[in-house]
Length: 183
Image (cartoon, helix red, strand yellow):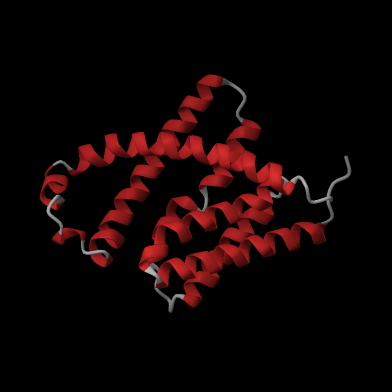
């Protein structure tokens, strides 16, 4: 099979960058669309990976983050979940799927990604969710803060296991959709 041209890689990565920046900007301005904007940006970054454009995905992540930072009025706070974990997770999953062949190494990589997710969740909780969404005013906040690290670690591992599995499935779906593009 012939390797796609560099111009195709640049075009596919530019489309992914533009969609990611637009989704992140929309999510930053409209609070109801915050989670949807983050997920749409993640799905957009899966497009270059479907053609195995690793550098194209990395540059689309960087460009999307910079453009969203500029469009959001230099506010990095709402971009923290994307910058610390969500934007790089599809790339790490792709590299894991491509280069890790032994089953016991998958468990170690999963543990590393889970710890990375918990740290990103902790940072997002401290900087974004309590500050911007006023979660300290809710009725369940004292319980969560009493058992915060237990909830963060055990709940984070469970949520991450489901998220990681679903992102692998979504990458397969994006691969099937982009496979229809002839290049």
